[in-house]
Image 1: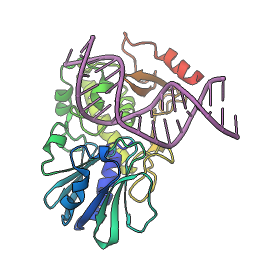
Image 2: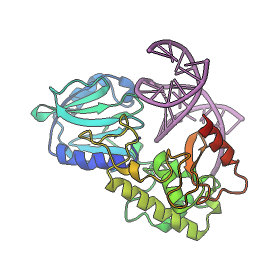
Image 3: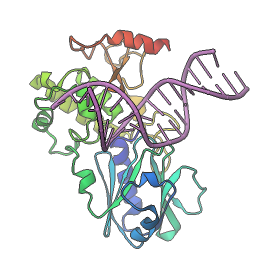
Length: 289
DNA sequence: AAAGCACCCTGTACGC
DNA sequence: TGCGTACAGGGTGCTT
């Protein structure tokens, strides 16, 4: 599941390969993945446009072209490749841009949740996003302001891309464990010192994810531009470690559902709020299956 | 404002 | 062994 670290890895690698190259055309095999464009017109629109820069905003990959912006969201299963056009066809390459020098930029997405946009103005897509957690400007007062006064639980708030951009299920669970905060705690219940811990945890977990080039949970999961696995999965403390020991205290990791998302906690390091449902029963049921 | 759910999809994991 | 089915998961949009 590409989140901030995985998309950042793509952006850095793609910048090396794509900046200065020219798009020659495009093919669209699954039009639903291009919600803002006419699939048949895409090739003519991008033809002749050069790649100026490749960056990331939240979980979006942002490619600045001569006239337009190419924006990609990988969602659950999206991957990108730059390969010679003669490379073996990929059955899940649903949007393919042809490049100069006989190469192709392939957007590959078995589950078809990902989205590709070619737009003159990126603001409708990127404008609503919250602050970038790895920017120097993301400080404790910023986090406090983003959470300020809200009665919602921490887990849905941190997943909300308009609150903070870039975190998904994996890094939210890891950040909350690092901070020692239970996902059912509400934002307005946090003491100042807890906001500071959460800020530090978000930054350190995401920075580690970037340094380790992302999380690959399975062979079928995330791969980088050249097909290599990330290395963050070996450094996860709680995510998908239900029933295993907490690396900090040894207590058994539990799984609960918050909103609709599977959520992983150490019941000793992350003290549940008094009104929380009994996570132990939920975890026991999950283990029994 | 907050929470819940359906939807979009298909690979995988599981039950029988 | 094989078949069928439930589930996961980011984001959007709708309802409560």
